[in-house]
Image (cartoon, each protein chain N blue to C red):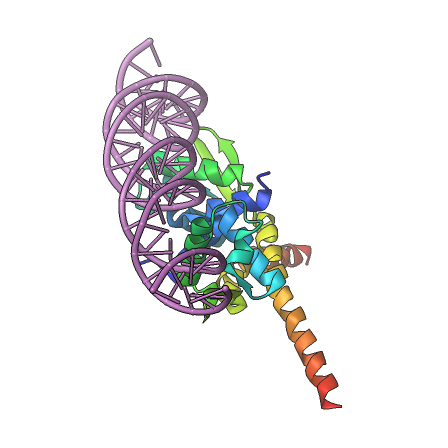
Length: 107
Length: 107
DNA sequence: TTGATATATAGCTGAATGGCTATGAATTTG
DNA sequence: CAAATTCATAGCCATTCAGCTATATATCAA
C-alpha cells in the first residue's frame, strides 16, 4: 500500500517542486504565472509540479477567471513531522534506557 | 548547489530505503544479513540502499569480521525537522498577523 | 467575433534509479 | 589450503520521471 506519507516524501524529494512549495509557504497564495517567474523551468513544468503537490495534499488551488491561485496546506506536513519525531523518539527511549542502566549500576 | 537537505529528502523518498532506516531507528544496530531478511528485496539491493543512507549521513557502519553493522544516525534528521517546522512557522506568522489585524479592527 | 492571455494537457526524450543476477573481496571454519 | 559465509560491486534491464515543445481549453479584452 502506498501511504500518504509515501506520497509526501516522494513529492518533496524533487528540489524544483520543493522550492515551489517553499515559495507558497513563505509568500502565501500565488498564481501559476508568478510561480513560473523565478522557478527556472517552463510553465507546463510548474503546472505539473503543482498538480503533484495537489495530489499529495500539500497545496490547494482556487480558480479566478483565467488564473489559478495556489496556496500551501501546512497541515499536510504533519505526517512528515510526526514520522521524524517518532524516529528520533526511538533514540531518546534508548538513551533513557541506557541512562537507567547506568544509574542502576551506580548503586 | 545540492544541499544536505536535498540528499536527505531524496534518500528518504524511496519506501524500501526508508523502511530500512526505520528498522534501524526502532531496533538499533543491525547487520546487513538481518536487514535483508524481511526487507523484501535481495541482499545487493539492501547493501545499495545502505550505501545511499550512509552517503546522506543517515546511518553509520561498523565492520566486525565478515559482518557490517549499520545503525541510524538520528541527528541527521534535524535538517528535515527544522525545514518542516520553518514551513509551518510561516503559517503561524501569517496567522498571528491576521489575528493582529482582526484585533485592530475590533477597536 | 477576434485576438490575447493564463493555465492545463499531450506527447516526447534523455537521465536517473530501483530491481535483478553474477561475481569479487574479505573473513571464518574445517 | 579449501570451502563456506558475509557483504560489496559490476553490469544489465525496465521503469519512472523531470524537463521540453506543441497545443487544447478557458477567459478576458477590443
